[in-house]
Image (cartoon, rainbow, N blue to C red; front, side, top):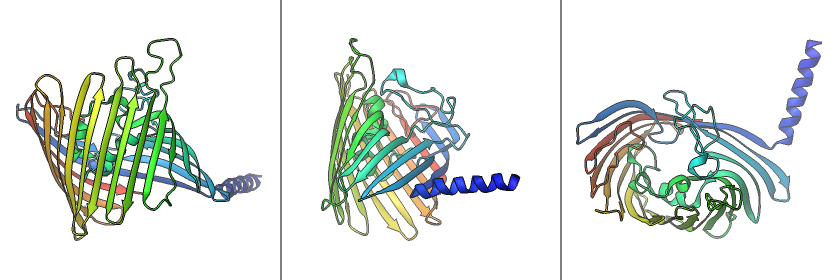
Length: 355
């Protein structure tokens, strides 16, 4: 009897597997020994995560529908592997939809991405929580990939709030990949508030990104707007890179608005391959139009050594100089930050393993 039940279970599993073209478990575990010290005297040393790549656990799958069409899903959760916790998310692109203040208290969430999509020769339609078009230029054209102590100040100091990186309740369209180097993404997202209130449109937004990549050259422009009764948010940027072989130069410029507050920033950086490793360098700046024009300037230097295709060791140094009333830390999310106009120095030493 037991053998029959086992056989039936195996056949059922095989039937499910054959109906699905592919299902993949994937992830990254990135552990970082990090130190930050501020000119005012405060400092902290901690074991944290995501100094090189963001730690994550995910599941993705694709089914071939025939005729060049396919259906797919992608579920990806952020992890804090230094203490085993998950990561919070946001349900409606507003402060009211934020997850637990302390990551992990709400359990595992697919906060990084949770989408289902349909694709063909005409492109891809994607539904769910996803990266916003306005975020891509900040991370693609940052030598540090918006991770760890080296993260560009155009993201560390950004004023655009909840939808700066991701949005929930999105409907997105991606151009097909056979347009001679042209690529693009159009996205709309909803705050899902009932009609009739002054805040009924809060969290509703749209974003657009278009780019061109050919050989060593890549450039892209992104524009977006998210509605709030307290004042609309606009996040617009342009970025590019040129691969010279011996080095890859990257740069981006950002102009943001949150109600009556404006912010502007830029980055210039480089990636230099050295044997089995890579040198990373960037200088970035962000400034707002508050009284005194608070400004943060950041210099970041780092090195990554690849032990294999999946495992790397890395080290990063970063220093932020604040003026005009700014108080940015050299390390995103540090437990202790500098006082107004203080400088801040941060270090990352870590290991990244992907699977």
